[in-house]
Length: 126
Image 1: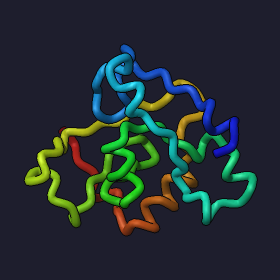
Image 2: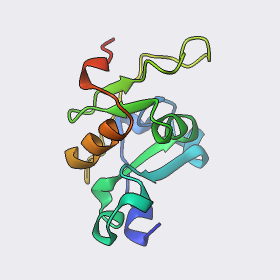
Image 3: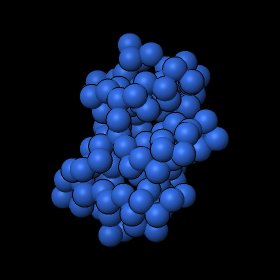
Image 4: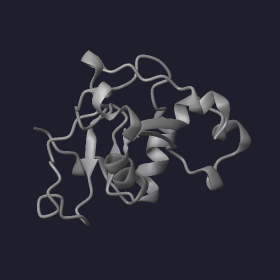
């Protein structure tokens, strides 16, 4: 991952994780930065664009990379109907706390949703 992506800073409200809500000090080693539009499908410019990056804990990163969760352009969490969150013990009352700078760009979020067949109508409100 290019240095500019590795250094994407995330400063959530009150020092809590972007989706899981755990205190950053407790899960810092579990946070990962990943591309929204995959590396293999991105241009060189997109690969180094901090708005093509998202920081999540390992669980939510796995769900995101596998296409089981995504975000609307307003950063509402979309849950796939192809995954049984409840029986896997994963809370469905997820919300995403957007970074204060270099927020994920709508163009990359749209591509992520399309690639994973997730519609905005699948978003959940809690």
